[in-house]
Image 1: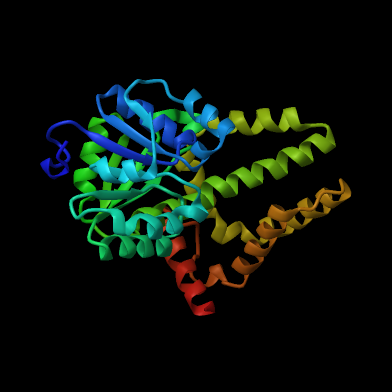
Image 2 (image 1 turned 135 degrees about the horizontal axis):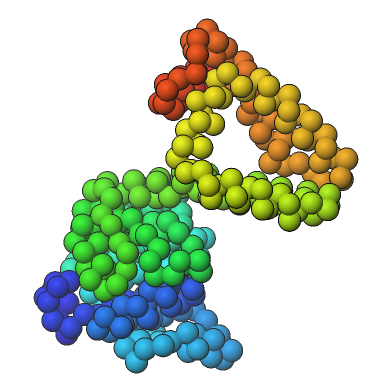
Length: 304
């Protein structure tokens, strides 16, 4: 196999470093589409670890092998290790890459880390593409959306899409895709924490089922974009009332002997909003969320 044939010609060899849920899901899908998948995982060196990795292989096109073989035979290499190992791995393998190879970092790291990894790989002479996985593999499987950024991001997005992955080119600048993911996580991870706090309190109060049904019914019956925009638009007129209500919420949770971590943060957020004096600018509820975001962003810049 000649790696200089390019991504779209000849036999396709894809290297995957890390064979957890993400790596194994992507590998089996790409193998089904005809790619040869060379996989390395640090657990290969452990007897029980090797058995666990082998159990995740569902296609004969996947080979568990050494890191050196992954690096020497792959046209494109996907890094799906733990977040804390992403930069360590890049430093470890950069000088072993050749100029025509493409290294795709799909780990959930900050834009600053992605840029550092890009510099490590490109300073060694190889190509770097930033990847951001937006969904949970365990929930939606291989249909999880992947954003790619970098000079060869568009080429890699098409390549991986042809191999069954839901990849999209997002931007030429490295850091853009991870910025999108990090900011999106404010919603996904923040909502996760809110729901857990709600349900723990509901369990202690003996009404968790009623709460779950009420909120689920509300979200099913009302489009999220309409609900979310209404929350933002009414914030300018209702933040003070909501602030006082949330104080009562915090008191209620403490009565149930629960530390109201997320609820207390909500109190602090609404209290800050009161200090913005929205009434001086918004005489009535705005029609869209844009003027609210514009105003609050300016106020927060002023606070800095």
